[in-house]
Length: 336
Image (cartoon, rainbow, N blue to C red; front, side):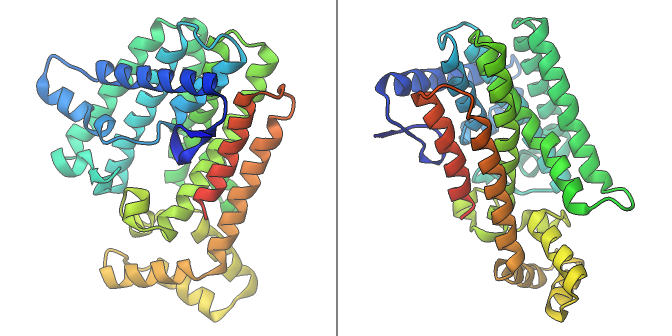
């Protein structure tokens, strides 16, 4: 058994491992090439997060999905570069919105160079992704454009909050479907589509990616509360400090409204206070780490991961399918 990709994913077939490793290496080269500019400062800023590393979760999915067709087709690596560049661009913008100080264990671009440079660097990455995408054909452009629309819509809906009468948890899960699920789904879709896989297979893998993407983000929500900075690569409780209500917080509020327990209400009040104060922030983190709401968020993560696994049922048994199933397990394990 060998290990490849994020979360220590095991790949038992040597040929599959070789294909995936070669594909990811080519993606890494493609990312560095795509982030070069004639202006050295732009190159430095654009490669800041590329060189910081990362799980390359989306390119890995492209490579695994491509196994259901011709894994050596010419559009596979460029499409993986496109989805990773798009993802990286959103990180630059997210860190500005969240005022994050750390990303992938290094100072965020907005901390190092300021908000304006961070936003414009994200735009630069979007532009480079679009250039690559243009060579992949009109259908690829259409798929990416629809996914990008969903991604931005999800971000706007998160900022606007749920409409009156809308369940906050349902609203949040819809947000994640747009913000995260859409691009993970496109990763699977591109891999299958570029490999020439049957349209039924393309649809199955797209559905899988959508659910896995939500599970992946829910695991991030849990990690933001439960982990230390060494595990997550960013400052714990960043979302709390910025007043962003992720699923553990929403589950807490749901429970407080339903049961009316004094300790739940007190923790909600603490979360609604100014958490820029380090002592209050630490107490809020401690309270959530010990609260049943965190375990409920873990169960939600498991549910979406199981839905992703179930979506794979129509696919033929093969090593690539086994690897995709193991990714579901890895996401759950990541959430503890």
